[in-house]
Length: 376
Image 1 (cartoon, rainbow, N blue to C red):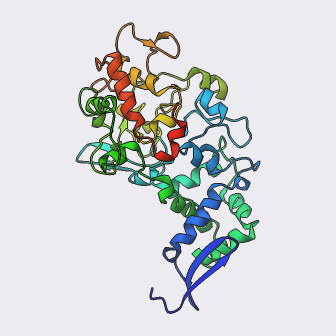
Image 2: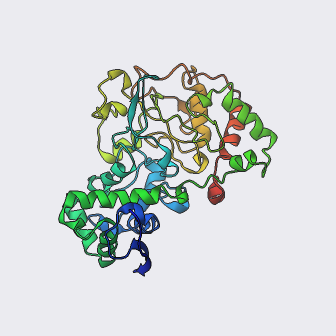
Image 3: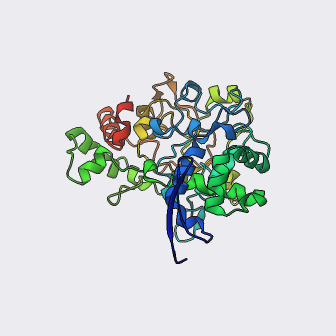
């Protein structure tokens, strides 16, 4: 659309850019959408008991994970009612904008991308719709109730109309999609993907990796075969191929006891996605980014492991007879879904203790500068 008269006005803390005397599409309000999305991302009034927002489980100052004690101890986040708890660990929202839409790659023969650990949301906008209505998260009864909460705030009403048109609230479904779209716009901002780690700086010649970190990088791309699923190609690598894998992760018994799922419950991961019917994909979860991995514990899809060194040891020795879980002092338990776990690329990597430590040292270099103070 050709702009005749450019107007820049401010209202209630938002910046609006529009064209005088005419309507405008959301594409003309990139700056405004990010500002509005940030406010919505942090707004607890959009949950049933008004205790929870997107930011509750994805805190910016905590590398976009949940720093609350329950998450750190059990491996999953408390819901809006401060009682309910899910069965999966909330992954970092950092760098999520690079995750491709959920699809099947016929050339690779793999499902790729999608939001949530099972890819059930095609993209960030669809993902943003989910937590509001999830009974163990924000626990709102329906879309109309969420939009009614939005409309209680006159600033939001004005902003939505400026961005999406005066009639945006005439259709609840469209208004709900607009809400999710706005939050997604914020999640696609540079705040979520600064690329400011020591590793990034080393690529630009601004930092020098230590000898241990260099050894760890060599292991990452060599003996440990981490690069197979976490490729480090290019100047802004995501350290994930966005595929799905069954790592043979054991049940998180403490979490299952807390959420009441029961001993017979099995989380089949990708197989729970309605677009997937291949039983061979039971127990597979999307390969996560390794960016900020040193400060985004607990780890694995169920938050079972508390320490990054434990994760590396698990990858290295999961299938080694007599190998011990350092967090329990007992042998590794069998995976929740054993039948098709990946045994070709992990389980017995034959790394020494020193090599495990070197690998951890390299992974720490993937921590963005903003979060280096969180490194254990």
